[in-house]
Image (cartoon, rainbow, N blue to C red; front, side):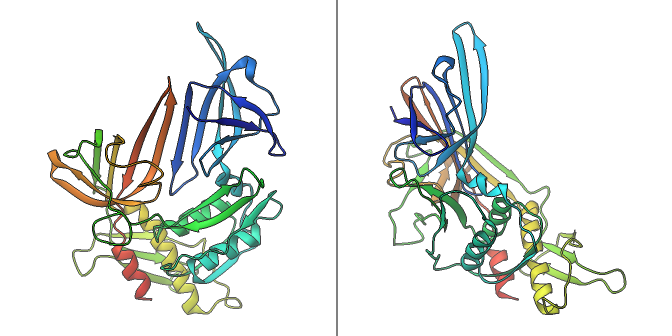
Length: 348
């Protein structure tokens, strides 16, 4: 089994945890979470964090839940990973961004992270990050960053160093492990290979839109509008996006910069109108080793033979369960169709 430590408010070990029911949910486009069941007699109010040896995440205990059944009294330790700590802060006053996405998001974090203890910000860059323009006011810091990064299939994480007690914020992109590239080892999950169990496939285009009119500041007939065309010249399924919350300040932005920010706002909101194509399944260790051959955020080949489905998709969630001396892994792949978004950025 794994080594689990409870840390106090100073990140010192206050207990070595024994548990036969651990859920460790890692996510790429949102904050991950965890749940650990321990005997009520082993609980201490000094417990503030959960560290699992060999994992980058540190869990924040935010909800100790007491339960009782015929087998005894238990405490369920529930909470989010460190990324959620960024949501203690809001983006205020207004932040204006124009430049490479990783540079601007690092600047955003440095501007508003304030007094989060032991948090350092990395200077590691993402080589293929695209430019971005946006303005933001009032949003919670972690949520804002996830929203901006998702449009470029990027993510953020706060990596905890158990020895130094430092927390390092960094932006990253999972590795490409598909057969379309030759830099990393290939990873193929396939029903035919036997490394896919209990697969669930969801594809839903009922809410799909590929063209938007984005309405910004001002009143008719002087309201500022921009159009966002993601149709690639095909049939247009249109929608309207109200962006009046994105105010125009001519002293801080040119009209061109404001329209670019409106377009970025539209790109983010259009993620709600994309074709949903998710694949969930339990992975076996047949052929590939978790954390060595593949990890959260990696793009892999997925083949579901009964549906004649083959796609390149990114691992957007990994649900780990340690129970009764077994370790199971459930993978969630999300296949967001971002080629149109890439074109929208280049067309500015």
